[in-house]
Image (cartoon, rainbow, N blue to C red; front, side, top):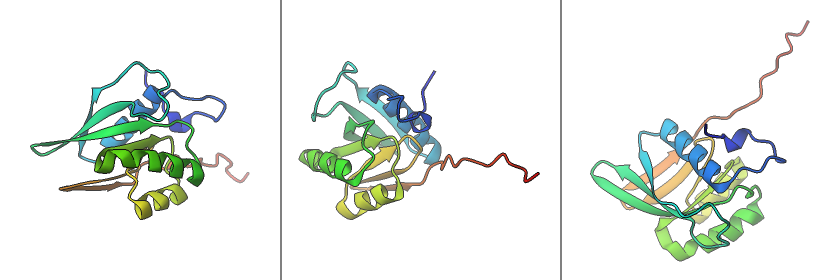
Amino acid sequence: MTTNCAAVSVSQRCSRIELLESALYAFQRATVLKVLVRNCPEPVTLGHRAQMVLTVLLDERALDYVVVAEPEVCTVDALAKQGELLRRYGDRGLLIIPHLKPLLAQYCLERAVQAMDARGNAFLFRSGLFAFAVGDSFRAKSTDSGN
């Protein structure tokens, strides 16, 4: 059973692997692109090194991304720190976080930080690929009928 990290409360930290599974499932639902985990080390904290390689399948091409999944990135400051660390991988760096809120998405677009979240939101660019996906909002609905 896959845990949807975007729906997990702050007190219930999801693992990097759960975050990856949720993000890939949501991204594939929001786009026509297929994504595969090509190399995934043991689910341990790896500091600021890449944690896995993903392959995005686009027609006959396979585009590899070096991924850092960070379940606790939720502020611009935290995103900026991870974005700087990803720059060492050039246009292959990809950050996966639980939710790309509008402010975080704007930061990614302005600074060319490739990112994906567990709700299907994504910003990916490479030669021959520009993907800007808007996923599910998971907005809470009121159950009050007004009576």
